[in-house]
Image (cartoon, rainbow, N blue to C red; front, side, top):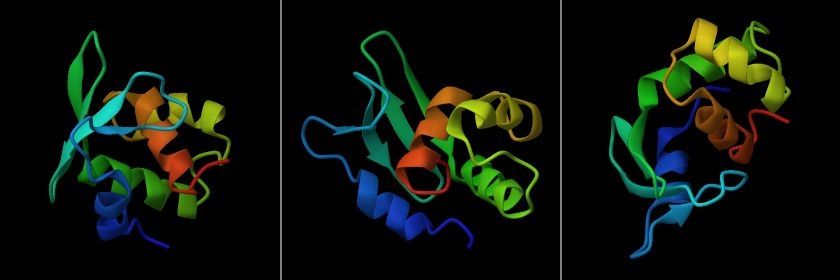
Length: 99
């Protein structure tokens, strides 16, 4: 099943303090729009793109990425993007795409 971006927006809609990402201590979603999820840690700020998360879900559906979150990190980096791959896999795990 393709990534439901509306569900992602609903899940990570930030409050005043931002929304914590499970499994990623001190990392919060500070904003989310139709194209990106904006994240912040006390040491850095970055984004995760909708396009890359959708591509990862497609690869998972095609069996080209492992379902285990830890194993998926290097495959995400190699086949999707070197865009915070550890954080991206935490989000995909929280959404139920990874184990």
